[in-house]
Image 1: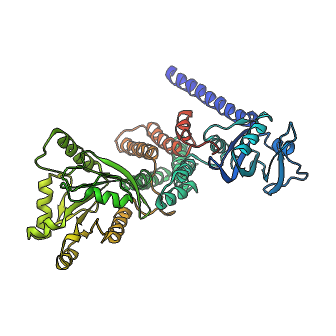
Image 2: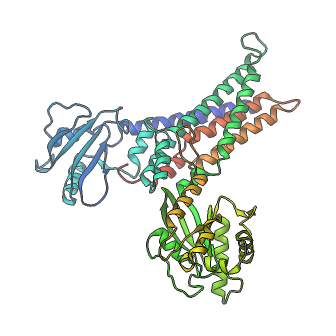
Image 3: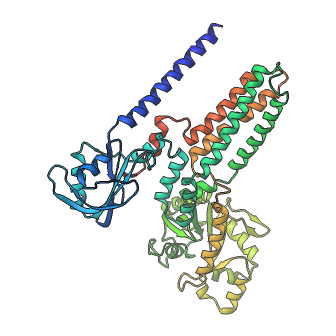
Length: 500
């Protein structure tokens, strides 16, 4: 009894602390300073956007423009003045967004002016004289979060959208920023809380007639279905994370088969040194590329030689094999002249080639490599037309890095393989794009498994079992920010640019 009273008292203290912390955050937002920042790109530009947010934001329009009758979300072309000296800073568009119908949920103002350095400097100085302060990185979005305008998944999607470098990254980030993941995870959390409420009602009133007799069984059916859905969501091959971070692609093969030349063609510049001397590449050369809208982290490696000449070459070969074991996609390059001279069937030649290179991570199935690998036969410019025709019959991509023959076909095939690896982002099937999400979902699924393990025993404590559902709901809540800590928020917002 004493222990139970201690737990109740400790829980009450914790809840009081949380409420005080939330009140402090709300107080900081309501009574805190008004912030400003350049929200458009840095440097000289035609138009620059300066954003102001906070309870005193309207003061910028009152003191710095002569707008008499201000209407929300209407653009006014006005002279913008220094409130102290009356000097005109620039002529630009002025917009007013009263809260809560603004990005941050607070009163907001935007000045769209010319993007000259002197103009921006003068405007920032004038805003500081109104007792506004410069915004911290991500502070506008952070205020939007505290005003329930965005949840954490939408914020992370917004950050990914800003940093997206390829078309497929843009699509995935846009879907997340628009709330597709948020809707899915919020529905899961709602189902968990509903089941928890039914089970707790069953605990309290199960012996009375006030509650249906099958409520416990129905809750278990719903929870089991939810556990299956979460498990299926987790078994996605990390498609979303690979797309967000880039497909780790490695180019491997024997020395002097044209790996560095292929790398240069794919990144469209002379990034790697190319010579006819075998062993020119001694270390891993890593670059980024955009192929068919997918982000690629491309690695050129040292030629895999069974009899290396020195310690540097040995280390280069070791690193090449390490890269291959960690890669999401492998480009295996073969010298077309060596193949045609061997007079072997291609499947036989490929099998011997992989064995000689000691590539244990590449597995042949029915004479073909898996979907995470492509065979490129290079130097077709050295072949006769008849020999080229023979290559076209094989399940390979034949190219020439000299005259770029076959390169369009290579890019198309790589794009098809990358779509399998990354998937095609859609609103109907949102994918996990953050390791943080995956970690919380794995713990949520583990809690549900623990719940079913507890209730499967002959004698079990239903109260103890229900705590596993509560913990599962808490883990999902951490993803969207329904349950959050300052440490999580700091981690998310630290990479945001100032002005967003």
